[in-house]
Length: 268
Ligand SMILES: Nc1ncnc2c1ncn2[C@@H]1O[C@H](COP(=O)(O)OP(=O)(O)OP(=O)(O)O)[C@@H](O)[C@H]1O
Ligand SMILES: [Mg+2]
Image 1 (cartoon, rainbow, N blue to C red):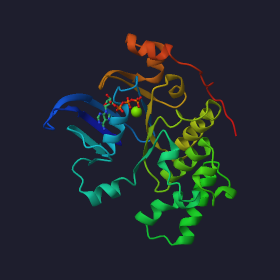
Image 2: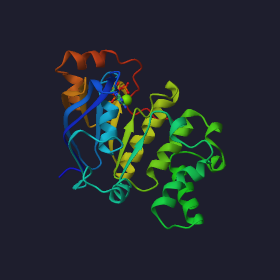
Image 3: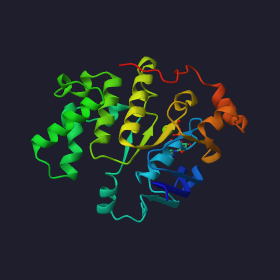
Image 4: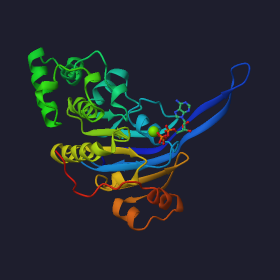
């Protein structure tokens, strides 16, 4: 049994309404998508804009309700979980978004943002929560002097590190990373990506790594799922996909690769 098992997931959105408000147009955002993700493994979901990548990621966490299909996490049916149980299950599955500016509360200090999940999910006292936040921020390379700062005072790369620390607070088994470095300066992308990879190794995390840039995923992904117009058109190990993409579409994604990050590149 894999950590995450996704079967025949589908989702349509209504796009148009007539004068009476009846839905008349539909977008099949995701159609019949199936995959598995093992503990400690990284599966990249790649594809052009609008391919349905984010919708898949959000449905896995039930941030969007699927129309059809099943999601099983650690042997448990995510779609059948009642709200209280779903909240508990979400300790084990977290998400990191593209834009750290919008995922962090501007009125909350860095330390409080990282400690906040502990308020909801544990009975640790304030001092213990603080210690845990300091430890996590240290792990992601954010120094003690930033603890009392607000998001507006941090760079995009620093903010994404804070968002990563916050995602780690409850010791998840899996993180859905939705284009976690796409909004960052090219110069800091490799650093944040290396951080994610190091954390994965150290903590045995599984990543569902949504990305449209195939150059980025080569260093982090074990397997790749290629999506087009809501459907999976190709899948395989990362080296298989790189060496011999079977679809013209995948080849075009590979050719569109702009700035490759050297394997093993490491910056402080
Ligand atoms: N809430 C929504 N309401 C209506 N349509 C939506 C909604 N969310 C997504 N869609 C549509 O579903 C399709 C897939 O969107 P999705 O955001 O999953 O794509 P994506 O692969 O993540 O693209 P990108 O690379 O641009 O982030 C698109 O056609 C999009 O317009
Ligand atoms: Mg997206």
